[in-house]
Image 1 (cartoon, rainbow, N blue to C red):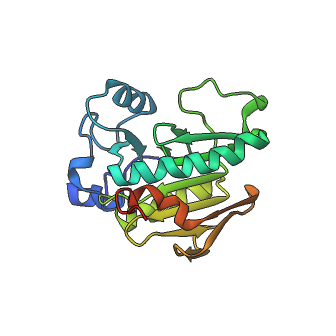
Image 2: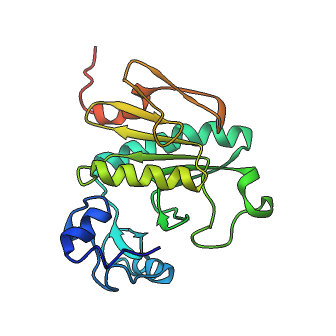
Length: 219
């Protein structure tokens, strides 16, 4: 699927279709609506800027911040310990891309169960054509509400079972079990793994522990 150029007659229209992202996040070569999967791989391998996702034939730079990266790695560490001890599957980070229905996305953290791996083995493609069971997106200042709504729809329509949208500012996690079914958990509450990771539990506060570094004082 590509941008509907008959509708997107201006850059503003194009940005709106992409989820209201900032213009500086849109790569103009190849032109919006004409980028391919191969272009996405090449752009990410070039290392000239950040990481790009392919959205409707357009290369869009992932919004990333240091704070979001730290929290994402903490979540990956917590999930990874649970998953590896039980040999449940694979945990990947923001540079682990998946080829979905109309986009190529790199969730900040993702879990893929063993039974979703083609043939039960580690995928050989640089960007596997499969949907994770669980995706985690940690909000960065550059993310827009419309962009996250679009991601949520894409993920669930592609086969994702559970999505966590993590808000570092409010120290909360929005837990989606469908594009519209959501429960928001605060710092004092406990998160579970739902359908993808039965038995997993973690205090929401543990996701944000490293943000308080330097605040603790010796007794």
